[in-house]
Length: 340
Image (cartoon, rainbow, N blue to C red):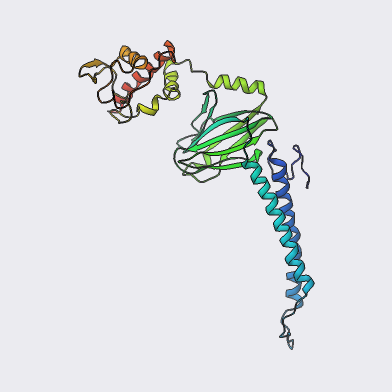
């Protein structure tokens, strides 16, 4: 067993390969505590067995009514364990503080946890989000791509219940709590693909809430960032992506016809007459959607003109992106019709 650990040395065969700067300290302290337990447990059990045999009840034997003690032994078994416990506390506290002090100049990744999948968003707006569970069947897992030999900061939140973000190879774990942001950082030291788990029971498919972490070279990381912001070629899929990436989903509900929100619902509106704030009506078609994206206040929907004005996307979206959004909104009419 190894008491002095290097980055490439593992104390036990069942430990996952270490891939962060936390590994040596965590593995060293685990190893020391384990051997302390062994060195105390074995002699104590042997002594207990011997005393049970040596001082067993025998015919005619009468024990001394006086309490026997040995000052040296009592001082030893008080002082020595106290020193050990204080040392363990000190080492654990220093390791915890190292994990809590986030350095400057980190690469930040936004992590969203929800039943039962992980979603990752990079600084450039690129995202990795793949449904981890469909029914009870595990689908393609989301992959978090990180550069090697860099400080990484996870900015984490939950959309529903308590989750926990854990990468065994990094020896890094932190709860993901609804209603607040939690932070976790680590320094990657080794390229490879590693497992990511949720380690807080979060419902029926908790065990399926998985992801992969891929640590790559800086060049490969830059390629992954560029790929993460690429939009699908299929107009409908591109529209779905833009609907979320551009923040449309924040105000406009696409799940049910007539659903309330800061902005009017898309679902079930295509091809119909919609009332405007000025009292007139207009056809909900390609021209109306395009104008509403580029100049939202020109023909504001009734009830939404003044209370929650929408910002213009002129200059922010290309024509093909607007076409993709129109394709997505048009598909919601078919969804609504199919549900009737």
